[in-house]
Amino acid sequence: MMKLYGFPVSNYYNMVKLALLEKGFEFEEVTTRPSQDEDYLVKSPMGKIPCLEVAEGPLSETGVILDFLDDVSSDIRFYPDDPYQKAKVKELMKSTELYLELVARRLYPAAFFGEALAEALKAEVRQQLQRGSAALNKLLKFGPYAAGQNYTYADIVLYYTVTLGELATQKALGLSLKDQIPGLEDWIRLMEQNSFVQRVNADREKAMAAMMG
Image (cartoon, rainbow, N blue to C red):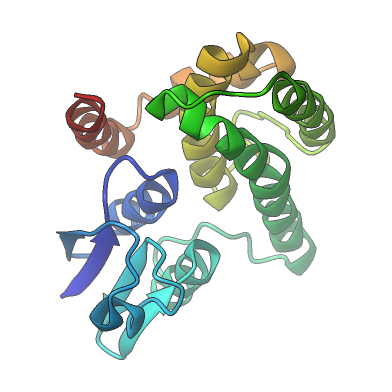
């Protein structure tokens, strides 16, 4: 059985967890924080989460894990078969990570752990989020899914980026990503009709409450 290392507050962990559930894989969750312990570094060389242990050995880096899962599950695929359309989904995934996730992540210490946030950093992040949102608006289809008619990895990556990111931008900047990205709010409602999303979110809310407490 596969083992998924990480914890349910992590958006990257939840991306992989949702993909595993959607594809029907049996897996065990092993609660793990980022670690520099030698035993964990054997599995995840930078000590990051998530890490997925499969029969052949461990895998780290979310994008690599998602690609692997699509390669080994022929019945449920989250990339299009057409090479260009597959590249467009990957373009959207990478743009979401670079221009939203990694930018909003700079707010996490202030939003979730009460650290001070310099005004210069606020201004910089706000500007980067606005530019990133403008770029994503050129790629997003919401037809009804992020990349068009079909549910893809772009939906999984975007959902767990914007839902955690929205908490951070609202708390730290008073800025809503829903205002920056037309169609985002309706798409989130669509995603939250998914029973697997509901299951992952329930676990996330419990873990978040415990962490904040």
